[in-house]
Length: 409
Image (tube, rainbow, N blue to C red; front, side, top):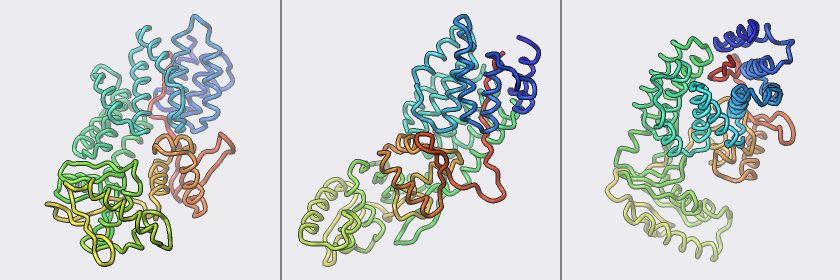
């Protein structure tokens, strides 16, 4: 490998994409194409980065399987950062096997971390946890250790465990300092800010207030009857009743919990659950049926009784009934959930959002259209290349930096 390629690779490893481009910007040989692709990704031009990495992978000959595998891993990282969650995982698995076979343990581990981070983004936390348990980061480079601890922290945050999350982020910060890569340090600092930002809203007696993640953890450990609108479940004392597949019952449970200790009128419940402004006898009959179903599901946690005006909720052995909602003030939870994903500052396609939220792309598109009408999100690109993101805040840059450059030497 010539001196310019070596110098460019070292510049990328140190987080200096402009320094790398100065050395290889005018070259079209496969190693230079790969380095240019990684540099463009670090500078935020993901479309150009993907094209360059694909050219490099095709240009490497059949005897250069290791270099081609590294290009595939780099392209997968670009896809992850651009929130293209539908990329071919089999190609990444094959590249990881090639890297392992050639003794490139660091990049093989990085390929596995990419898949784990994808699992985490689409909510498959248990799978991500099992995959992460196979790793011992002690013998990995500092940059890989940083990524490992960021994934550990991400899983802990999804599990609402603040103490392990904080400890993992502290280890990540120390590893990032050892790696001397500014992008890694910035990513760790950004993750640490999440622990100080509102994670949800608590609604009690029709009044709402923001909660940090540690407050949510304390709420789950209490004896309160919690209607969790972030996960569409009802919980109390460690018992959980999932209602994600039963939206009508969840809407009724939330309405009753928000009004606790009072009751909710039948007309209000019909409007909340069925979306009808005017309740007739058929709506009232359906309401009675759905309330019977809700009563049976919650019989060990609460009683649902009829009143003169409508229905009321009475938790069993709980101090109070509360609702845990998205941290954003949205009347519809679908736009709020979409905004929560877009809050990471990255650009998302509607298909990636649908995959991450576990809902249909049409539902996500309606939510995006509603948010765009209120100027809370903005699109760019057209057709399949269209991406959505939140508008940049005045005084802040949204320059993307990949968490770990992929060396090619």
